[in-house]
Length: 133
Length: 498
Image (spheres, rainbow over the protein chains, first blue to last red):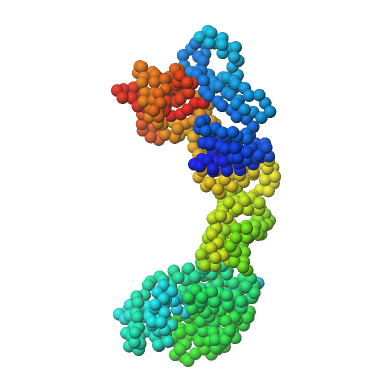
């Protein structure tokens, strides 16, 4: 894994585009403040050419405009559930929302990390836990 | 190939320099003088003073007596060396091997350089005219040996270009002064009535050695080309370098790119044939106004790929200021390394750090955003969280130990722990509420403590008790208490879990 620390969004996007054009990479993750439609279109075109997966993390959720990306996710942490009523932290959980996806259905899941893998938690299980709680 | 040398003589080096600095001195006779053995002697004169009969080595008082308004200035020690160095660096556009010849000359090895200026006559004319136009009164000569070129530049009267093998004829009518001899030997020659080189050239060597010593014979043999003489170049020549002089000065970015492309083509063919690759390369652009602009690139691994190196230079083209125009491009590769061509084929297209595509990408990024922005981290064998990760020195470095995954560690570790205000119920209990950056977090669940001691062999300090806590919104944090629980415990936030 290689880290590139940059100050400006403009540089981040340039580096991201260059990296996405490089076929030797597994994935490119960029963290920016904002992303407009034109910039996202450039990145999307680079991805389509090289088939490298790219993620853009936008940390100013208030300023989210429309983009040309294939999918948009929103992920929030959720309080963990105690395992068998023991004190301490449970397995970490997230609320994963697929807000928009090209050629697909948006969805909403709760995912838990346990036994070294991600496990989706079914709605019924959640309700049962709530009832029991 | 027959070596050819050029000697340049600056008749009024320091005074010309001062006239350039202070144009009002142009028509005033002035000299530089320095005290020597209780007497102030003249070290340099300007042409006006010289016309009035003042010469170098004269006592300043005598000079004052024969001229009306002579200006005597203090000699500046070391000025000649500095000026000659500057002029020598400027001359590198004509040949890579330039040497300073104290006190008032330059020596250049011009073998194979002159044809670019249409022969030696054009070459010499170009250099002398340029030097004169910039204000230095220069004389130059070209010959097979350094000695003859030196002699003809200073004392020659017929032609400045001595054809190959004609040194003896050229030297015949010159005074013995032209042979760069010791003052003692010169005096002796003068006393014995040898006023030209012709008069002692035919005398047997044994006789000359007995009378004038070995140094005299060496100088004579060097001038005639019987003995080798070497130059100490001003700038050590780089083994991998390409030159591209331009007929017309170059001003546009497109033209600079074409020049780079051409230079890279010739350099890379050479490197490829020798199985080498560029690690560092510098493009030096000599401008018409005498300035030098240069840009450098470096690569993560040796490369002789023209397209890749060109891309690296392309990012830098905007940094080259052509001003009035560039007349010479010089591409140097000061650092090259062996490239295994077989290995190259094996690794290409293989995902991982060995991939050439990745190395090329990183070179490009480094060219734009700087090398310092690119980081790679490796695990280090330390318990203290800040020290458990270190920066990798190169792309090829492999970790000496594995990443530890037995203890919970946050996804994001802060460089420096940030203080938080905390309310804890009981000693050695996790906090109930903490305030970070003005926001209150109510702790719902907590794990810990995990005590991490300061590594005493590196640094003294208090231990830390780490707790992993989860607030009511589900955010998970890594916070610690410094030292034991006492009256005013200090709490810090050190990381964020996913």
